[in-house]
Image 1 (spheres, one colour):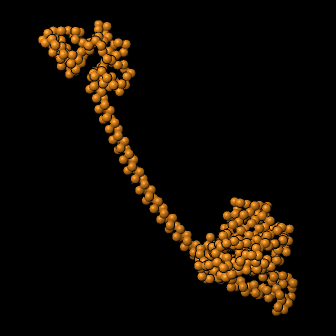
Image 2 (image 1 turned 90 degrees about the vertical axis):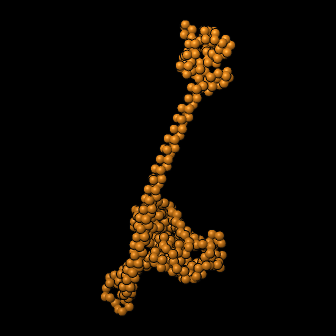
Image 3 (image 1 turned 30 degrees about the horizontal axis):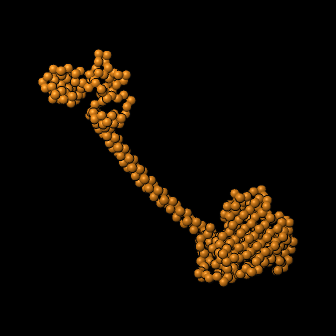
Length: 405
């Protein structure tokens, strides 16, 4: 027994395992068993052998048992040590202190892992904040660049519009003279020219001048709208009369083209509150396009109706050559005449549709174009309900124009 006590003392352990000659576990002897023996036998206990005091019924576990299972085993049997056996042979010993040390190590490891994760999260956050600050700075810088570029483009566009307006004015003055004098020559008001060819040439000059004047007027109108200098001289318009007057003005072209033009105008529709000159210009451009691109024998239909909720609607449909869907945005752009084998033979600058669109928008309306190649084109104009005569208007009769497209 004295050797057992010395072993427990030297190794700082509370329990020893006793093995049989074949290496299998024979029993277990703890310091508590030694104390009981000394208390019971007195000094005789020191001369007793370990096998006399050992506990032969030993609670053990296998290597595969979980730590939770070992702790439950210790708690159930009120013990602090559990031998680990495999086929009766001792592999080791697990004590409460071993488990507590393991838990301590696990807690420390978990705390360190959490600390590292927190540090990594903090670093990631700092990097993200730096990246965000850099991105925000780049966005601000890019925004300034874009704003500067936009301002420069707007200024250049304004200068272009003003220059275009000035040149148009300068061109129109001599052109009016050319048209007037060519008309005098063509009509031979001051006497015969002496040759029929001269009369023909004078007519050609007059027609060319009229065409050029129409182009200059369109450019001037667009430049005024772009620069915000266009004005609306508004009043109540008899739309049926304006449409019929436009048809009469184009009757020669209609006859030459050999097409049929019909009107379907709601007789109950009220007057339209708008600038009559500009509305006639819109009608002339749109109806002129419909006539130009409709083949002989084709048909152009003009419809107009008004509703308090949907406003005033004017629709011009033709059975002409049509426009491909992908080309519609180009057709509505300035100088954006669609170039295709079917349209290339038709003269034009591409100003008619965009000018009509701008003039409609100047009235607070919108212009929609639907078309299909070989079927025809339908242009729909919508004016707000406030432009029906008899409605209340907040604008004065002389309204300054807004921007262009």
